[in-house]
Length: 238
Image (cartoon, rainbow, N blue to C red; front, top):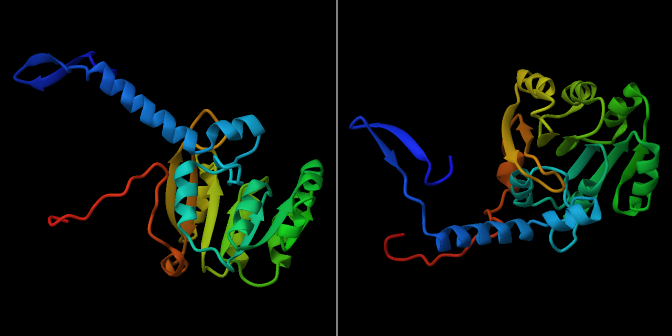
């Protein structure tokens, strides 16, 4: 409800009107929010037609809260498998991860092949079984598995069969794929949902991070440095 609207309150049986903050405060709040949004790279993403940060570096097409959390992880040497390739592939690789991806769209596969030097392997698989089973032929256990392409339930079932339980599973658009999210939780995984806005889209959605044990997070998680955050001095009452 906007400031200044009449709000009914059960306080002394009276209706009370919330005062509006001064216009200068409203303007400064909007200015700060606008500046923070610009620093996220949203405008650049819309202009380029792909998710990027304000400096043009690649971002996953996840929500900003999920991206900020993942940016806290030390990914050097981490093994990442993606169902669905894209700027996320480059995001992982730029942070020192070893990346395997499977793609179902032949045109997008050709586009991503221009960047395959950054990846361990990029595979084209157009059928459901071939696509979902691509993880089975990837050597070794994965630290991160991303489910962000087609046939998501089939992929989730393969992941739970072959995944070693160490590390993270990332399910994007989990508000849409609530059945896949429920299946993974039913397999004993802990789920944390990161909902909010993200690159490109003018609507909010959810990116979920699931794990069986927290050892990968505990080993690699660094202190948060939020976008548009500020530093403070530690005084005597800290």
